[in-house]
Length: 62
Image 1 (cartoon, rainbow, N blue to C red):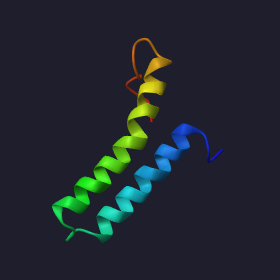
Image 2 (image 1 turned 90 degrees about the vertical axis):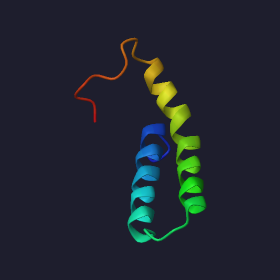
Image 3 (image 1 turned 180 degrees about the horizontal axis):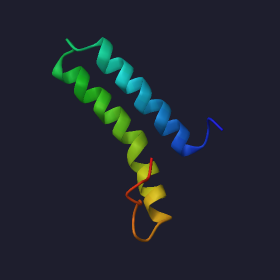
Image 4 (image 1 turned 60 degrees about the vertical axis):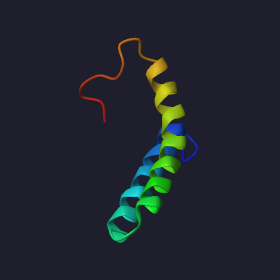
């Protein structure tokens, strides 16, 4: 399901990678903006996922 948080995160990461590959000459401000945007999405999802596991993510998680 595309609305499942981990799928939203994977999609955002892939879009960020594509943007980075196509915008290697971007300004520092553009990079900072992209990073902040991704972090705003990723941080709550990562906290949520981390909350399900008292020991954190297993080493082989992907």
